[in-house]
Amino acid sequence: MDKFVPIEKVAEHFCVSVSTIRAWVRADHIPKNTYVKVANTYRFSLDKVADALLDSDTEQDDFAGVVY
Image 1 (cartoon, rainbow, N blue to C red):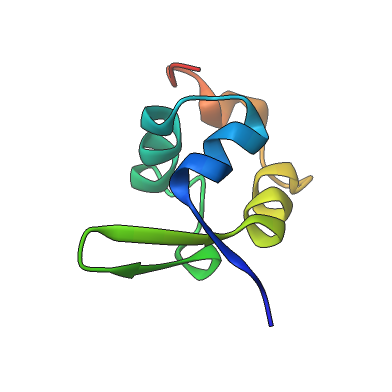
Image 2 (image 1 turned 30 degrees about the vertical axis):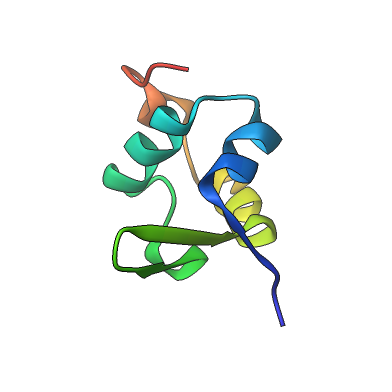
C-alpha cells in the first residue's frame, strides 16, 4: 500500500511552493489517481506523483506559465 503524504511534503520534495502543487492539481498535471481528497485536505502518493510528473509523454510546454 502506498504511503500518502500532505501537500507540504510534496512541495518540499519537488522544491516548489504549496501554491505550485495546488496549481498543478488544478491543471491536471498531477492526476486524480495520485491523491485522495477528504473535505479540504489532500494526501498524495509521492511515488505516483513523481511518476506522473516525470512521464516521458508529458511535454515541458505543459508547464508554461506555472510559477515555480
